[in-house]
Length: 262
Image (cartoon, rainbow, N blue to C red; front, top):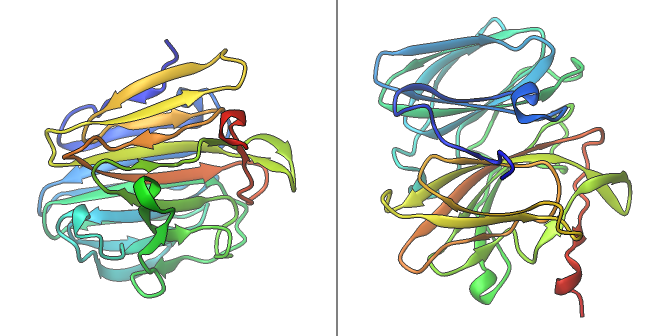
């Protein structure tokens, strides 16, 4: 089995630490801190740009030689309110001090120093419906293609209602052939409501050389190096995921699975 499903290290501290080296690819990194009130976390960005996403809880953040105050508002991700986030360029550092118990995602990709540090949201982020029927889900775009304050990162969060499908129809973005398709590696950080529940994600290629179906639990991360990657929320369980994408070109162009056509 391909090593695509990454379980958290525990329930406290840095519980995910996915680098391009550990993922076996070139661009996307993803880390996750679960902090108790009063605890701190800090990192250097090095040659990578970072978006800190306050998944839930509140924290005082300093970054790029500036005090950004207290970020965060929702105490539970399933409140679905817009997230508070911070863009931190390469060649700088950041520090977080938890004001409440909090979950902080660290989304990273190669940086070129083209953009200054800045707050992202909650202003300007609107929960938007995508799809219809059992394919309905709700999107908070954090840093997609329309936002031009990043060098490489594409970041969004998605809420999938009970019984619905998401990242669907099945699609892939694993070739560097713009404008038809772009090569983008991707991580999915999953949360489940209620937390004892589970969801499904399949990652598969047209030729079947990669075909993995995974039961995802609250807090799991799935790597998508190539292929199609739909998700399902079983009846009774609501699914959230935070997507991080990056590749050689900061454009999101995809191709639908052949079984979806016609």
